Image 1 (tube, one colour):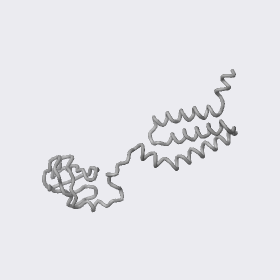
Image 2 (cartoon, one colour):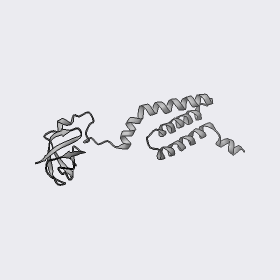
Image 3 (cartoon, helix red, strand yellow):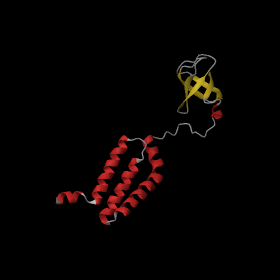
Image 4 (cartoon, helix red, strand yellow):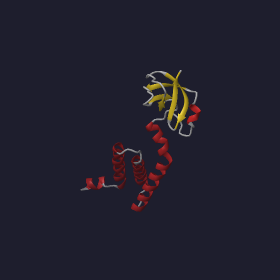
Length: 152
């Protein structure tokens, strides 16, 4: 019975709750649950050295979890999802690409648009003539998110 009491200490419960939440993060996408695991570990560490009431533990858990979520999620998400500096920024106007060269990655026909690779991003592309995959083309205009291209 004494061994059971030893395992029911609040700091151990919070620690194992943090481990459980970390395993849940591996199953659930979104990089959110890990911050609650961090909050549980913060409570476990503080509870180990400075015993608190249950209300204090819950308040510390919520505060540390939400604070770490707000402060670190976007930075960590960039690390885990990967950041490619050559990708197109969403604020760039596509008209700026007129006159630039791209490589055809999916065959373009007059009736069916294909795809071109421009600055590390694949774009829909249309042309008046058939253009084979691997050809170098020049962007002559844009229509919404589709580039009008011609062979170089």
